[in-house]
Length: 217
Image 1: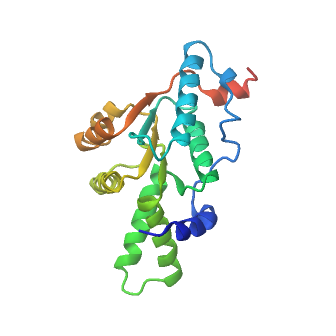
Image 2: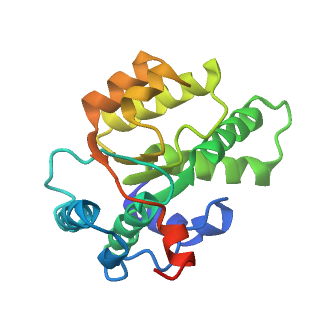
Image 3: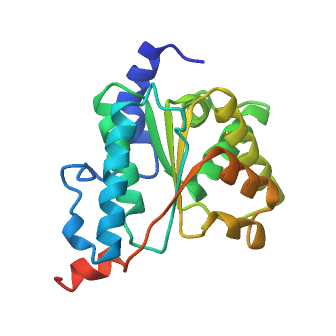
């Protein structure tokens, strides 16, 4: 693993190389509960409080793996990135990536490793991203289930989840699919078992906030 000083140095340049930028406006102070209605507002108020406690006691809390599930536009990504921004402000190493790009990063690293004459710059970049995914304090994995699932991606996801679990590193996953649906669609029971056994599940509810905002509600 990398020392904290090297992690901080790489963290400062990492966004340039990551394919998925984090929204700078995704912060706890910008989380607008008024966008939610009825029961969804009460639920999201609880989730916001949970996220603030999570970041405030990151070293001491026992269960640091979270799984956000819900339909499109219900605030999963915003809350996930708000957690990431707060922890980065406190000097933690955080990497945000969507599922399709996660597997692309892993494959690029493996191709460079297996190459007879790898390009030094491409290898260095691939290694940097790969090490961040496997070794950073917090991995924010968004849109799980939107990637093309194959036996290879299933194996890669299992390896990644197990490696981070064994190293006691935190992972937050967001998906439009419920955790128990993975074995019925793209993935098998091995993924479902890890999500149910190693993650706290947070179902998001309500209508698509992007459409609500567009309609001026």
